[in-house]
View 1 (cartoon, rainbow, N blue to C red):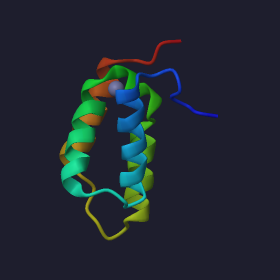
View 2 (cartoon, helix red, strand yellow):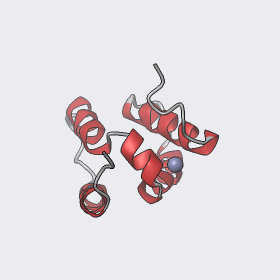
View 3 (cartoon, helix red, strand yellow):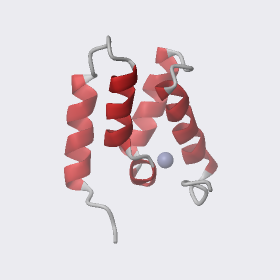
View 4 (cartoon, protein in one colour):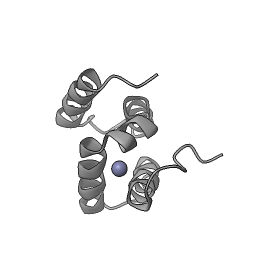
Length: 85
Ligand SMILES: [Zn+2]
C-alpha cells in the first residue's frame, strides 16, 4: 500500500527522497531541498509522519545530534496545522 499515492508526483518524490535520507542514502544538499518542500507542503507534512520519522532517524544515527532547528520548525508546523479528521 502506498501511503501517499494520492499526492502529486512532486510530493511523492519528496517523501520518497525523505525516506532515502532516513536510510542514509541521500546527500545532505538534496535533503535541504526536500526538507524545504515538506515543511512548506501540508499534504506532504501529513503524509509523512515527520516527527515519528525524525525520532527514528535520530535513533538510527545514534551518534548524530538531532537537527534542533528542524525539530522546532516541525513542532511549530504541527501545532499550526492540526490533522483533518
Ligand atoms: Zn508536497
